[in-house]
Each structure stands twice: as C-alpha cells, then as structure tokens.
Length: 127
Image 1 (cartoon, helix red, strand yellow):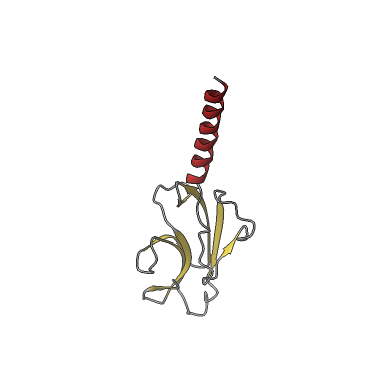
Image 2 (cartoon, helix red, strand yellow):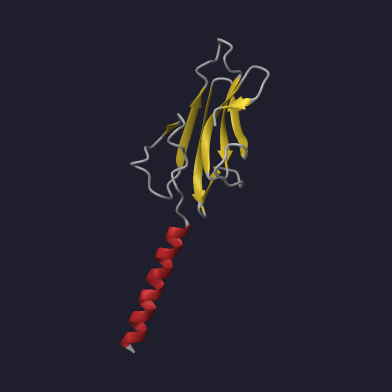
C-alpha cells in the first residue's frame, strides 16, 4: 500500500515537472541582433514574459522610414512576420506558450524576434 502511494506521488511530481518544462521557451532574441529588452539573458527564466524595444536611429535623416518588430519561425531569415511598426520607436510584450512566443494579445506563435528597418520606399532589412 505504501509503495503504491509513493509511486502515485512520484508520478504526480513527474507530471507537474513535465508540464512546467513544456511551457519553457528559449531566449527569443538572437545574440547577433541589437534589441533592447526589459531583462537580460542571464536574468531570463524560461517562461517569464519579456518586453522588446526597437528604435529607428535613422529617423529624420532619411536612412529608414520605419522600425518594426519581426516574429521569426525556423532558422532562416525569410520566414518572418512584421508584428508592429512605427516611425521612431516600438515596444511590445511577449509571452511564452507551449515552447513558442506570442505577442501579448495575439495568438500567432514565433520562435524568436528581431528589430527590422524599412528602407525609404523599399524592403525591410535587419534580420
């Protein structure tokens, strides 16, 4: 009887631990991309929300028309979605859900994020 109770308790602990691990996300910002975040990678806990800020340092001199935050899936730089954009600065919050990130208030999921910049009358660059 004690053995069955102990085994049941162990299975419950493993299930809770497994579910907690299922909600973990990797750090969502590439180390090769300049992005301002509200916490550092060293402070990051696998499931805590994170805020990302991107600034258009070329605003007013014609270098870039806009700055944006892109959601990226996969390893390449071609599979991205522009999540938010502004002429000068953009800040958005993101939450980890089932191993992927979503912008707060949205349902689409992404692996990581990057600041991107729109060239005058042109393409978005920066990934």
